[in-house]
Image (cartoon, rainbow, N blue to C red; front, side, top):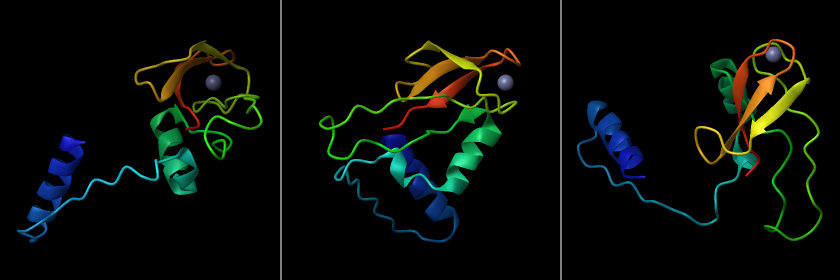
Amino acid sequence: MDAIRDDLKTAFHKEGYPSVYVELVLAPAWTTDWMTEHGKAKLQEYGIAPPSGRAAAGGHSGPVRLQLAVKCPQCSSLNTKELTRFGSTSCKALFVCQDCKEPFDYFKVL
Ligand SMILES: [Zn+2]
């Protein structure tokens, strides 16, 4: 969070805003439901499968969400397999495509 705050201040200073205050707001908690289609497309272009589906409303209660398939960001195949629930960060899982054989991160629904 400190790095994000510092990067924002630096970017605003470069654009001529000498006095910048960055307020950190943690509630409501961020969810992948807020991710735009443009943002999801950018993730896929970068080689990360974007989240599919929507976050469960109201936290952990209610129906259990099922993950049907994750599309390979390289070849769009749905023939993929989860290798490990946690990838390079805790919000990503590591998958491999069974067709093109490329490993990739999947940004989990949060
Ligand atoms: Zn593939």
